[in-house]
Length: 270
Image 1: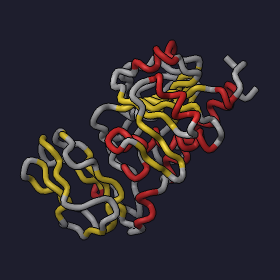
Image 2: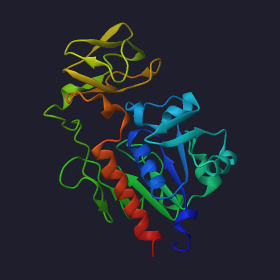
Image 3: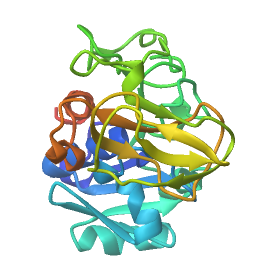
């Protein structure tokens, strides 16, 4: 397992949303650059300013100086890597894992449950958050819940269970999150980076208003035209009011990404 050079490691990442993208960015900056990310055809990322999943619709996405590009299949990974870019592929069933056989697989979907990841997927399999058991379906689990244990690498057992309560920012938790009032297609009235006041209409789902619950800046917003289910997270309002946070990786994401890097080094940097 440990005979590969760090520069030669191939890392597959399930998902290309905020946390997955922070992981890819951190590994890339540490010169682990043969990375491919697997996404669904209509990504549900909210923090699109820092999510490589935007490459699915735009063809490419730049996050803090690192670029990811959409590829048509695993045969295009090498070309992306040679150009110094991260590869993104529409692969909802993760067939690229079988085709490429990565040295490391990171499940960064954050579904709160395991949707099909197993120890046999790669020599090192890492799961982010609840839904995984270290030593059972993955080798290592990274704690994603805010608090004292955020970023802890778990070698046996599971992460803390999902609380269902959004993390607190500047004293606000649930009220900062925008959720779908009904099932339908999300139509946006505002964009990421816009300043809002409590009660402002951010968008609509099937004619029902999506209103800001607090004053602040729209830090994240799901892509307009996305089909959504009632209750789905559509976006979040940052009460700190700094628009620059919209396009930079968060403290939580950096912590989790750093732990993934450490987990890889524990196994391969010997």
